[in-house]
Length: 435
Image 1 (cartoon, rainbow, N blue to C red):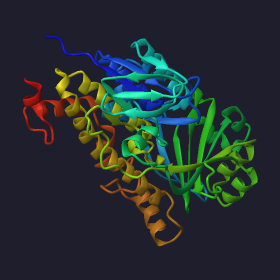
Image 2 (cartoon, one colour; image 1 turned 45 degrees about the vertical axis):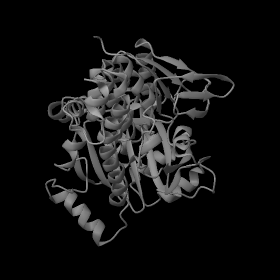
Image 3 (cartoon, one colour; image 1 turned 60 degrees about the horizontal axis):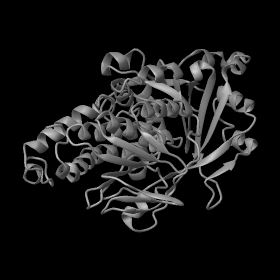
Image 4 (cartoon, rainbow, N blue to C red; image 1 turned 90 degrees about the vertical axis):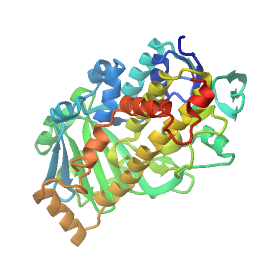
């Protein structure tokens, strides 16, 4: 008997919602995405695609399209904020391919989004634009859409980001993002303009991710658009007014804040014509991601938003989508739907919590004030071989393989096999499924 086919409605056509739509539709199910925007697109600049994410994209057959829009950095360089001195370096190319069987890439967010949109549509995913969700009936289940007919489904997935209506509906209360104390300037400059300055040729000619660590702040940079654009993110203390999340930046204020930093970095900031600053916000950890009805679950930033200090936010959402897809490929009876969502939550929540807390901890490492602790941190960077707990988590010999070596499909398949043996706690297993 063939496996049953379900109609899955996903709320939100961001990177996570698209990833889930690809994974679930590849498993043979009907997928509809409800997106509030009138047209598809992503704002922002660069996003990193580490091996745990690119491995999934490779499985889905979209990696060649991703690679055509991305660059592959040679390494991650940790630098002193004062003079740009390289304190430590982590190889990426060909290291990640050789070690994890998948590349480490960086890409413009809009290009990443466009590739996933095309892939989803090729899989038959229906994307309904201009569809603002007003409420959710978790029992039917049904999504109510402003000024449009309601949409029924077998399962609803909330992928509507940090400011999630779906999360608030499930919690039954308002749940706005909370402040983290940081904001980010996001900047791109033309690499050809950088090459006009002899002191910037080194940065312009090398495909690498640079991280300058300084008191209460850090800076990340890398190439985009095939090496044509230089992407820079400057993170520093939040000084935006209350209730303001984004604002046009005062360039002189930005330059003054980084006045005592690496002269190379200051040269780049002098080239900037305009930019904005974004408040970095987060959500509190949720006790559960799925509704007791067994017909609704959250994913991505809607349930495990993270600070960007491990460059894993988008990757975690892609992993969520892959795990959902893998589980939906295994389901053999409608009565297993509730268990499917519980299994998804259990195997994903533990990992994403570790990434979220690890990202917050990385901020403390990056933003260490000048002093004895900072000096010892820098000495470890320079003199010690990476060890468990190493300040560069990308080089940590225990954390790195846990992070980059994750195989979402294997994890899901192993969990489902455990479930079918009647050994997955909290599920009803074969009794309700009649297997």
